[in-house]
Length: 144
Image 1 (cartoon, rainbow, N blue to C red):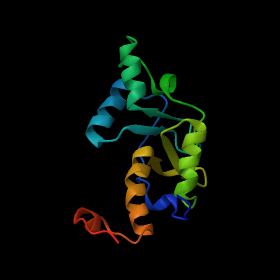
Image 2: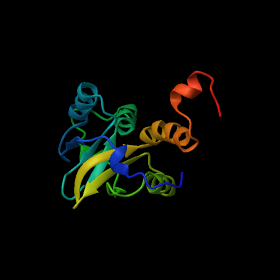
Image 3: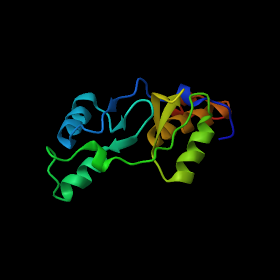
């Protein structure tokens, strides 16, 4: 990667948050209605993160979604990143910590989230730009 593109350019914002006392049933509804795959738990400070995988896993284990709380399932501690950190740093941080989602914080408050999907969408386009190509050139079969 080796460039200085800030995380703020690829992060999703605003970010959705939820309290520790919310139920898995409520979180599943938010995932479906909002089209998101994770929620940050707490706001300042961030307490954890809950993902679709956490919800599916808990249901697969026979836990009652109406009685299971986010606080029981969330991943903690949370690895975060700042909006002015580089995309390269985000990728390194994800790889080094074995996570797929990084809440983006400013002054301890969540301002966005960056995911492995965000990185996957950014990298091919960015590499084409660095090579002096555009997506249109590549799709038209024009290469320098």
